[in-house]
Amino acid sequence: MIFDWRDGAREGFARLETRSGVWWYFRTLATRFDSDDVDQCLFAFSAIPADDASVLEDEFEGMVEGAIIWPGNPGEVSAHASEVIERLSVDVRPPSFVGRTVGATGHCELWEIYRRFGSSG
Image 1 (spheres, rainbow, N blue to C red):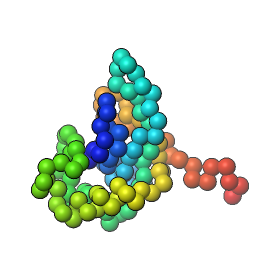
Image 2: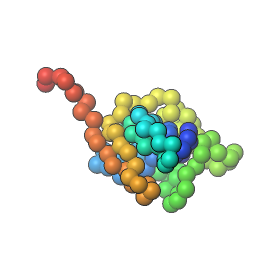
Image 3: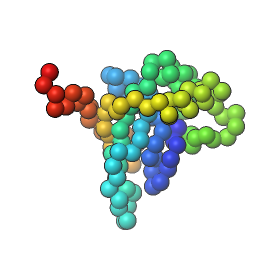
């Protein structure tokens, strides 16, 4: 699901299989603008609680290609999934990963964020 699109997705939910989960909320962290090509973006990926991720998986597991632009057409997404999406987009957890898309493949390169960066323990 995409909430914002400017020369590519800027914010929304993505399905990325990692050891830490499958569904992630993402938002643009930094952009390198390119007047001759697609802008290059770094994204912050925040974990989604397992119960909420399960709702998203049940709702969107059959979606193979394309993206849903939020909020989309009425009736396109169930009321329960809509409630979860609205709540998660407001109550965002701190990011676990920073990532960037690699070429036009849609694959994402991820780096884990050090949660205790700079601490002594």
